[in-house]
Image (cartoon, rainbow, N blue to C red; front, side, top):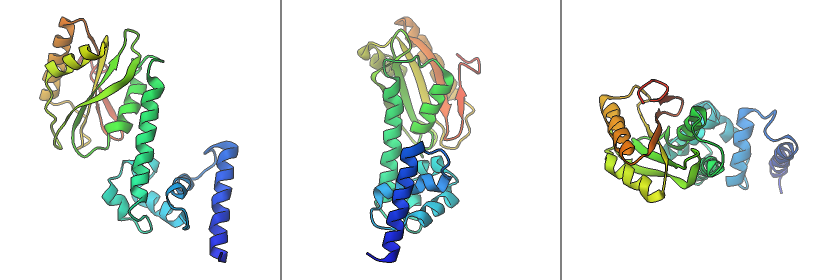
Length: 229
């Protein structure tokens, strides 16, 4: 083992010991990324690639939201690490979903906003999703479904399909969400018409539409908060 090998192995060990002692408290942003990279890159110094990622994408969220092709363009990252980072993000999103299943109410706009910004906010194409809730507004097990995936500015959604899926799952309430890849969260006329149609269809079978959220990676528009529901 060379001196360089001994150095980065020792550095990795010190990072892990700091994490085990106090979590991520006191870590610089690049050190958090560096710690993640050690999981995917077993035998290289990852400090410089971590700093390069922060320099290009700004923070951890920017890195996890970045397309694989852009991650691979960063020096020292290679082809496997971007996939590992996407797996980490997907696992974190699944954790957020499962932590809400059957537990606390999901009627809280802040929790809903955080969940969907992470899940679909950075996607390049528009995606329409639904969360199915029980009568206590708790998320049903495996209760988040992607109903439509579309282009950069439109996902075709049919109210009948939304209601049929909710009844099939035995839901009592729904939260609708879709992303705007252009980051302009102002609802289009189509968004408003679609929301009204789903609300009317839901009312006929005694389903409650709790909210409709439009998200980007950084922000959220709530139909309920804006008085449109």
